[in-house]
Amino acid sequence: MEELFGGFSLGLFVWMAVLFLALVFLLKKFAWKPILDAVESREEGIKNALDAAEKAKLEMENLQADNEKLLKEARTEREAMLKEAREMKNKMIEDAKDEAKEASAKLIAQAQASIETEKKAAIADLKAQVANLSIEIAEKVVREELSNKDKQVKLVESMLGEATLN
Amino acid sequence: MRKKIALKPITALLFLLTFVSYGKEQHGHDEPKGDLRTEIKEYIQHHLLDSYDFGLFSYTTHEGVENHVGFPLPVILWDDGLKVFSSSKFHHGETVAEVDGNHYILYHNKIYKTDESGTINNDAENHPTNAKPLDFSITKNVVLIAMVFAILFFMFSRMAKSYKTNNGMPKGMGRFLEPIVLYVRDEIAIPNIGEKKYKKYMSYLLTVFFFVWIVNLFGLTPIGMNVTNNIAVTLCLALITYFITTFSGNKNYWKHIFWMPGVPVPMKIILAPIELLGTIIKPFALMIRLYANITAGHVVIMSIIGMMFIFNNWLGSSLSFLLAFVLGILELLVAALQAYIFTVLSALYFGMAVEEHDHH
Image (cartoon, rainbow over all chains, first blue to last red; front, top):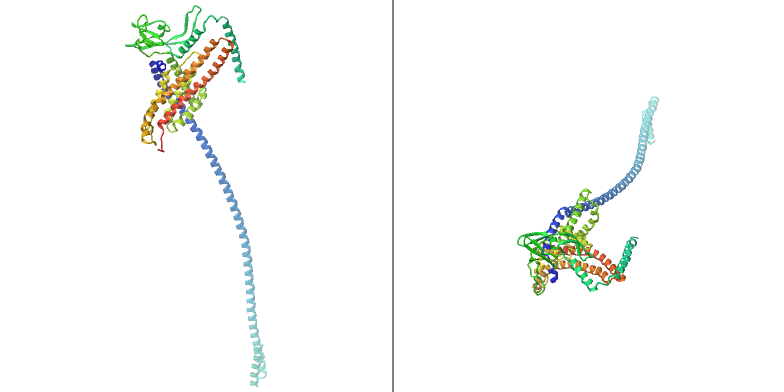
C-alpha cells in the first residue's frame, strides 16, 4: 500500500484531471453529441419508415377487404334484382290472366243479360203482335158477326184466356 | 486459411530465436546470472514508472557508455515561483540541475531540492528528507495522455463530420467505431442507467471507455507507454465517477444510504455508516482494479520476456517466447475488458444514483 501511494504523483494527477475534463467537453461538443444525434435521427427514420410500411400494408388489406365486400354486395343485389324481376314477370302474367278471365266472364254475363233482355223484349213484342193479331182477328170477327154481341164478348174472353194460358 | 498464413512467420521467428539464444550461449558464460536477474527486475520496475524524458530505448556501447534514445521533456516546478527547464539537465538522474540558483536532483524518479554537490539526506527508513518542490512537469505519461486525447479527438470529430457529409451514415473509420459507440449506449448505458436518464452520462461513459481502451492498447506497444498503471491516472478517473455519482444522487439514493427502507431501526443505524463507506469503496475499487490489472499484466509479460534471457537455452527461451506471445494476446483482451468493466461499473453507479423506487 505504501508503495502504491508512494508512486502517486500530484503533477500527473492534475494534468490528467485537466486534460481529461477538457477532452470530455471537447468530445461532447464535437463528437458525441453530433454522432449520437445522427444515429438517433437515423434510427427514428428507420422506425418511421417501418411504421409507414406497416400502415400501408394494413390500409392495402383494408382496401382489399372493402373491394371484396363491395363485390359481394353487388352480387347479392344483382341476385335480388333478378329475383324481383322474375317475380314481377310471373305476377304480371298472373294478373293479366286473371284480368282476362274476369273480362271474359263479364262479357259472357253481359251477353247473357242482353240475351235475356232481348228474349223478354221479343216475348213482349210477340205478345203485342199476338194482341194486335187477335184484335185484327176480332175486328174481322166483329165485322162479320156484329149481331150477336154477347156471343162475341164470350168468344174474345175465351180466346184471351187461352192466350194468357199460352 | 488465414490461421495457417499467420502461423508461418511465428514459427519462423521461433526458430530464429532459438538460434540466436543458442549462439549467445557460446560466449555468455562470463556474466553471472544473479546480475542479469536484478538487471531485469530493475528494468521492469523502471518500465512501470513515469519518467521525465521521453525515452524510446537505451543501449550500452562496447565501451560501457549508456546511450539513451529519445527526447527530453519540460520540467515544471513550483518552488518560490515557477521554474521551467528541460529534463535533459538531469542527464537521466546522473547530474544535478541548477536553475536560478536552486539545485534539484532526480532521485528514485522523484525531484528533490539539493545543494551543489547533490547531497541526499536519508532518514532511518532510508527515505530522503530533502525538500520536495511541487512538481507539475510534463512527464512521459502526460505526453502520452495528451497524445491519446489528440488521437481520440481526431478520430471522433472526423467520425462526427462524416455523418454530416454522408447523409447520416458513418464513413471510413466511423463504420468500425459506430458499433462500439452503439454498444456502449445500448449494452452499457441504457440497461444500467435507464432509458430516460442515460443521455446525460453518455459523454463521460464514451470518453472513459475509449480513453482506457486506447491507452491500454498503447501500453502494449514496445515503446512502453504505461498510463493506466499509474495510480494518479486511475484515481482521477475514479474520482470523476465518484463525483458524478454523488452529485446526481436523488432523494432515493441518499435514503437508501442513510435510512435503508424495509429493515428494522437498529439495522438502519448499523447500515448507514456501512453504506456511506460503500460509496467511497466503490470508486476506490474501480481505481485499484484498473491499476492492478494493467500493472500485473505488464509485470507478468515483461518477466516472461526477461525469462528468455535467463533461461538462455533453445527450449526455455522459445517456450518463454510462446508464453509471452499468448499472454500478449491475452493482454489485448484485458485492455478492452478493463475499459468495459470500468465503463459498466461507472454506469451501474450512475444508475443506482438516479434509480426511482416506486414500490417502496
